Amino acid sequence: MKKIVISGAMILAASTAYAATISSSTIKTIASKVTVIAAPMTTKLSGVLPATITSNGTAKTIEPVPGAISKGLLPGQGQLDRIASNFDADKYLVPSWGSGEIASTGRPDVVGAFRFMCSPGQVRRDDPIVFPGQPGKSHLHQFFGNTAANAYSTYGSLRTKGDSTCNNMLNRSAYWIPAMLNGKGKVVRPDYVVIYYKRLPESSPDCQKMGKACVALPRGMRYIFGYNMSTGVAEHFYFNCDGPTATPGHYADIVTAAKNCPVGNRIGAVVNGPNCWDGKNLNSADHRSHVGYADYGDTGVLKCPANLPYVIPAFTLGAWYEVDEDLDRSGEWSAGKSTWSLSSDTMPGMPVKRPGSTFHADWMGAWDDDTMKTWMDNCINKLLSCNGGDLGNGKQMRGDPNFDWVAHPRLIDVPAA
Image 1 (spheres, rainbow, N blue to C red):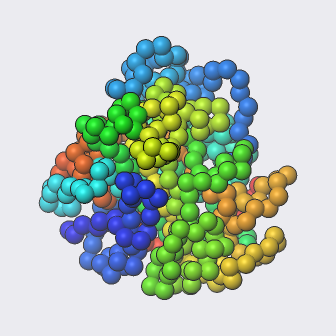
Image 2: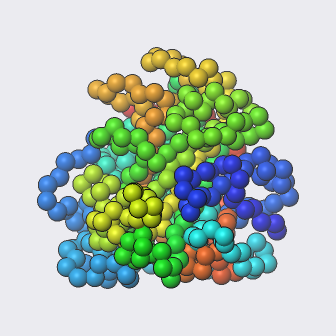
């Protein structure tokens, strides 16, 4: 079995320290010889979030995340109680790349990396973060990860139900993004989604320069990142193009990217997640304020905001779509023009937005505890470069047998409202 290293032009993060890339053109060349192991306005709340939002109804405070806040936590803060996997986790692990080899060092990069790929999953008008328990109320979303994710999903339900389109059930986390529409009544499903987590090793002295400490992702965390429907601020995402006749780049929206992405290539929607946390809250009223982004400010030193001093693994995702003739590639756009757009670009009661300008993503973590600890201990804290679900200890998450480089089906009807 040969190794696929996720690198190249597919994902281009803004910061060198958090950069990881992949080239689908390179992958196509070797794919035949490789076995892959691979929002609307926020609800306004006052005071402390109720336990049903912060902790899925849990009324007790669980042990704090090591290195983060340990005293004064309210019920539902810190992290949620451990929920053991209801299957034999060992059956979902295989020797890394067939031989048990250990992942190579990530140096000269200063962060450890854990990467894997996902297939597209269900398409639903659900959002269990913004509209929990209210099926059909959201704009249309493309889900991946947990196959049972829906409007009623909680940390508890994700940990105990569903398969996964991201390698296997060891990662029952739910990820979702606005559905891509072709302007002719169809949803364009991505061929695949690339995800990577990166963070400084906890032993790095830069952890204390960046914040107070580098810590793990807490059980039960969820957040939204990318375009903010409440403020209209568009940041931390871009579009790209990859393929034999592509002009890769960081493009602000679909219109601009499409001009550089002829038929026969793939257009990518890439969004970078937060890397700073307040150390106690798993959610917040706007589903964003408990996490945030480090920046260089005026000092030239990468630092987390003062109220978000704990450095967490940041994950970036890139969804890649095969370009067809329905994507207008003129580089010009006006409202009503038939072309690709995101479901969040056209919202009731709001002006139609330029296609792609509202890209964002949602995440509810539901990793098998031991699996996440393994890739944290090895890939992240030992500064390794782990690909394809390689856990950095000679074991690898067994690949999804249904994974392909092309979506099946690629186009589906837009579901009725």
